[in-house]
Length: 326
Image 1 (spheres, rainbow, N blue to C red):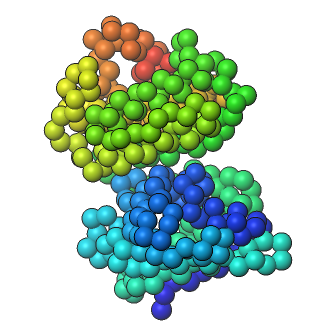
Image 2: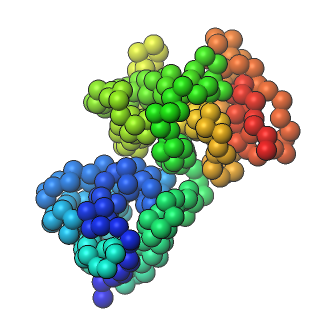
Image 3: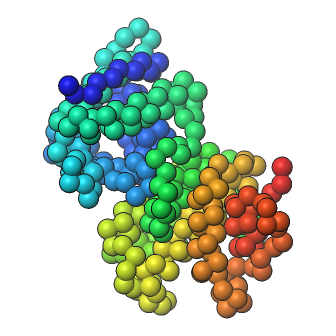
C-alpha cells in the first residue's frame, strides 16, 4: 500500500500550500536547498540531506488545494527521479488545514525507508507551524563527508542564521573588521557569485532590497547544485587564478560556515552547528589557509584557543577570529 499520513496545521490552506511548495518555506522544515518550477510540467530539485538530492517533475497543481510530483533520487537505481509519485492534498478544517501526503509507486523495502523520512519531516513541519522553529535538522547527516556534502551542511547552518537578519540588523558590527552586516552580505554574495560563475552558472542580478536570506540563497543554492554536478576533479578559472576545483570547494565551505558564525555573533546568537561539520571544515581550513595566504591579508593570524574547545571555536580561531565565550 502507498505511504499516507495526515497532519493538522493551524494555518490557512494557502499558507500550508506555501510551506510545502516555496523554497524559502521548505528550507525551514525539510530541505537544505530547493529549486522549484511551480507549474504542471515544471521540474524541481531538493537537497534533503547533505549529498542527497531528490527531484522530478510537477504533474498536478491546484494552488491552495493540491500538488503532485514525480519523486526519486539522483544517482539511485531503485528510486530514480520521477519513478514514484508524491501527492499532497490540503483540506480546510476548523481553525486550520489537514495536510495529507501520499507516496505511491515504491517497493515495500523502499516504502519503509521513505516512511521513516516522511514521518520525520512531517513532524518537523508541525513543529515549525506550532513553535515557529523546527530546529537545525541533524537527521540523515552523512558519516563520510567530502567538500560538496560539507558545503550543503554548512549552507543549512548559514541559511538558518540568515532568517534572523532583518533590516534592523544591517548596521550591526561583525567580527570581520570594517564589515557591518550589510557589507558582510555584499562580500559573501560576491564571493559565492565568483565561484558560481567559474562553475558556469548564470546567476541572477542582485536585488539589494530583498531579505538577506533570499539575496544569499539566490546565488548559494545554484552554486551548490553546480558543484554537486561538476564534482571535485579538474580546475576552475576564478578570473584571478586557475585553481583546483577541490581547493575552490574548500573556500566555499569557509565562506559559508565561518561567515555563519560572523552573522550569529553580530546578532548575539549562538551558532547551531554540529561538532562533526565544524571539525571537517576546520580540516579544510588548515589545508587552505597557509602562511602566504595570511600574509596577503585575507586572514589574520590564528588566535589562541584550547585544544579541548568545540571544533567551531577552533575553526574561527584558526581564521583569526576570537571565539565568543558563554
